[in-house]
Structures are given as C-alpha cells and as structure tokens.
Length: 138
Image (cartoon, helix red, strand yellow):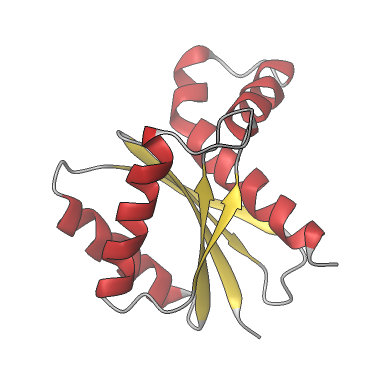
C-alpha cells in the first residue's frame, strides 16, 4: 500500500502528517521549522518521506474563499516543483481553506496554551488536510 505524506507549507514552518498503511487515518508527524534555504528544506522533507516509502506527497493548497489562488498558493506550487525536480514522485494538491482556523479551534477547545499551540498547529493542520483528502477518496 502507498502511504500519503501531507505537507502544510508555510513561510516559516511546514506541518507534516502521514497516513496509516491503509490510508484510513492521519497521524501528525512534526512541525518542521524552515531553515531559510529552500534546497535544505526540500532535502529534509524528501528524507522524511523516504522513511514512509513508498508514499505520495499531498500538499495543502491555500485558496481564497472565492476559490482563486493567491500568492501563497503560488509559493506552494513552486515548492512542489522543487520537490518534483528532486524526484519526489507523485505530488497531489488539496484545498486547505480554513484548515489552520479549524486546527486553532481544536487547540483552543482543548485548552492548549498559546506557546504550545504555536508548536503543534501546523502539524495538526497537515493532519486535517490529510484526513479530509482520505475521507474524500471513500
């Protein structure tokens, strides 16, 4: 079975989540703090993906509420192109509208401190993106 590794790509951090072997449930993996060197970030994430091989990469694609793509969506697409150039294999995109807001709400309801929310919100958002994708696949 091919697992799915989801990435919530931000300018400062990248949330990472992975599916179970049957692609039924999503589990958070980590929040990666970007190095400032995109090549190093890509290499790190490809190394992480190799731990779950074979796997496909699912990148959250931020869209505006009207469905159009803005500057952050373009940054995600450029990041995906770099992953593909380095041999990432199958790369998919998934609409991530409101996932960070949903993750923030979950953490607020769980009474997680502001400091701890910052450390886990991105990997929780990646988990929500991945679970949404897998649920849509039936």
